[in-house]
Image (cartoon, rainbow, N blue to C red; front, top):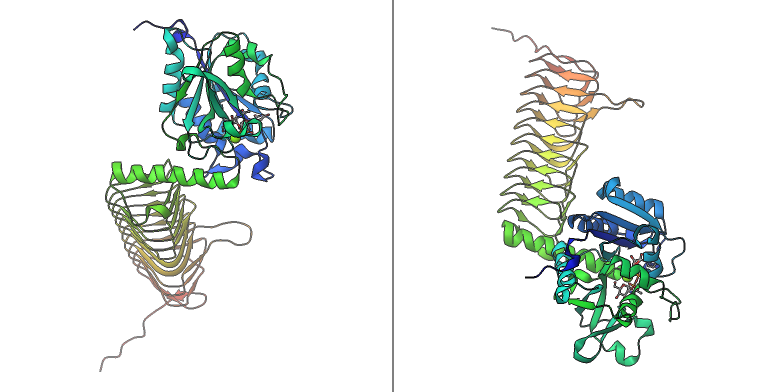
Length: 470
Ligand code: UD1
Ligand code: MG
């Protein structure tokens, strides 16, 4: 096949993210609203970066500083140039804000919308391929389109004789007849950069919204005799835009379904009710793990094979090994659970809590920045904070590590094979040696030696009464 002359040009990406998003009825700029726990702009930035372009331009305006910060969480400062659009006069004006950087640049420019977050890198690769190879020479502009059952709200694609591209007509400017057209503009395009900026000079704002539309550029190019192509895509969900909160919820649902479907089909995870599962795009779950209804798995969580996670549990940024059973309504954040542990119901792990293999944490137990050793148990009603607990120890019901003196946090260290009696208060800093025990209700203010039994308030060494021999 003959190579088109534009195939060797560098690739740039420009992301439109300056609008407020009036229809969101929000004080927060639209692209900062979240799906999958990340702002919309973050999804688009990651997709843009996956194309490995030479540069990514982000047009910012409303809450520009916050949008900039959000972008820099995903992209390196060297990858991105921020362009400020002073007043939001339309998508054409937004692109025009990058004129000084791009007007005479010999490149291919992909334009993405900050409010269309589900678009896949593979789809963009297809768009770029078609753009570069159009009629052997490449196109001046290629528009990504789809056919929708309900096209309302989107710009319609008007085609002339032989299906040739004629124009894009916005909903508000469309005639009744044009509103019947089901093929819509996804708001995603490929342009010859120089031709785009030349054509932008001719864009006017004589339309229903009084805005400078980017969507007028393909028509201007066509009038100038330049080739304009259409890349019609089959997947209608990928191009869904967020203009109101209903659509935001739709996108959330579509993304979750995409993730859950992949986990079921490719990774062998069982979801009892896939509709109510909330699993982040970045989470990993192993084979034969069973997930009950209303479970939320967020961030970069890792869950092993053969686990059971019961209803109402939330797991965020945590690592869970194989064969772990998590009962109903647990909250596990920023923590690690080794293999064969049992957790819950109603347990709370946070602040880098660690449960070693085979440990158990039961009803109404909170672990904060605590390492619970292999096979150790805290089965009921306890607060364990800033603590280390050795192997095979038992923490009785109602035990509390009193870790805070009103100013600073202090640590508690408990050894192996320790028996902490019910309702023990461990006033930190304090150490309890291997094989030691505390009596029910004791308040431990001093270190306990290995093998010792302490009781009372404050706890003292308990000497068993002398047994009299007859
Ligand atoms: C746009 C398209 C429409 C298409 C739809 C797809 C135009 C005129 N219309 O309409 O044909 O079907 O997207 O989702 O382009 N923005 C700026 N500065 C502005 C205005 C907008 O940066 O002055 C940004 C917004 O932040 C947003 C994007 O551009 O990320 C799209 O703007 P929006 O107002 O949502 O356009 P739509 O009405 O959805
Ligand atoms: Mg939009």
